[in-house]
Length: 115
Image (cartoon, rainbow, N blue to C red):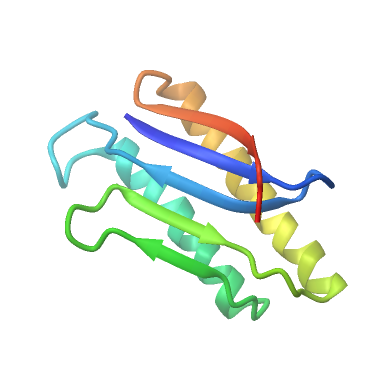
């Protein structure tokens, strides 16, 4: 199962997304649930970097896979904050749609972000 933690701060701003696990929907290379989640995560992470120049910290498990953590930096301009929140809100919405369609393979949890 893919478990996704959406970490929000006291202002309800998304500060971090942590994704662990494997969907297990199908064999590696044929798992549409894994592909859907991965493509959303990678797309938004790339957009944060390339489109709005937010230097997010990204951690991945290169060996086993199944782990991705995206963390926003603490110092952002107002415009970067607004744009990054829009992208991250879109990401959470897209992941929620996937989780609703495949509830036995994707679970989303909201948690408090503690820097």
